[in-house]
Length: 472
Image (cartoon, rainbow, N blue to C red; front, side, top):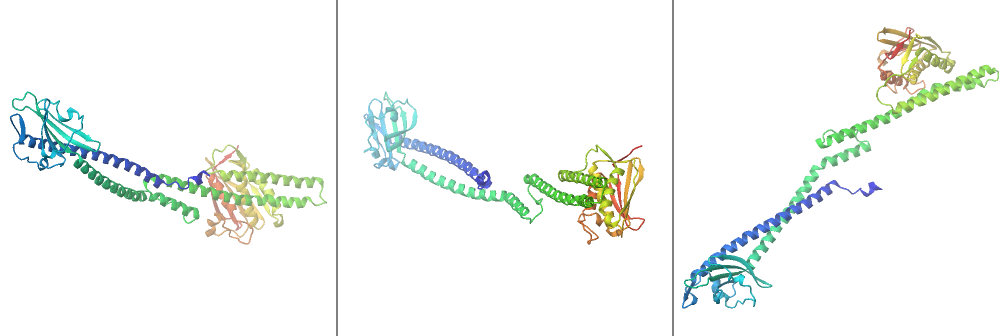
């Protein structure tokens, strides 16, 4: 249920949303900073322009008999036209307004305009630039400059007012242009970012496709041409896939080995049960048959337990904690096989040194000897011989040789016969896995297996084992 609720989760969408938020914050902050910088620069320009216009006003004013007048035409045309948004005033703290430019003839101040807006509180030679709100919808930049005029005891204040309309229009135009460009840039960056994300995340999409191919059986493993950031993931996935396949193969092999191993005990049990039903048998003979049946049942139980352990066991055999007498183990198997192949009158000769002990799992030894002897009985003509040879005692090694008097194995087939599923005689019953199981067990103990011809012309299987102990 949880997986279903997360099915629409997209790493690309998540990154795109994160980048969009980050880009919006960055471009918004950039726009704010640029807007503040533009307004600050524009206000500086307005202040310098008012300073120039103040000097124009100051140069055009003269006084005669205590009356101020314009001695020449004002060089700024807007001073001479009504309602141009540029107004000039001359005032005194004691006398109030003394003169205004023609453009300000219809301009009226609020009834209670603060004196500070017109520089009445300025000291001589002091300049102040500020803003003045004449009404709720009318605002001006204002510059005031206090000068000493001839013999007047109080300073004369020159004031120039300019409407903020042009300033606000320029700010509005700049903002429109700025945010249009930033918006277009944001869209372009998002498109580029989406393309980059698709390109950057393409290895993940390829990884998903490759995994889908593995799931559908179109591929065996992931490729190696992934970025360095994904190489560890792909290597681990390949290892997981290989381990899972090996485990499945081991399970299938174990089931096949189990079926193969149970054939001989089942055949013995079947034969002994039929024999025990003979009414002419004595109680002692019947008891012997049933005892052998019980022995084979115990053997089957051991085989099943052994094969289940092999199914989950990987790697080589660990520490060898037990020792098994090879001659005794071979005797048990030979006795059972002689009953299984009683119809062929199989005779098994045993010449194994009783001092030899196998260092390992008894079930491994029984499985090993059982498969080799079973093949000798099955493909031979009734005579089987098992004997041991000690080629070296330091360190101790033993060769267990199982010979039969059958047709033998050709030299070019000696290696192929050891492979799983390979059978030279397709008419005989079997799956061709007996010797493969033997190879697996022998190699797990560090031994070797080879095939040659016996002295009687049949096959001889040679098991070279180093995990033995020779008792005195």
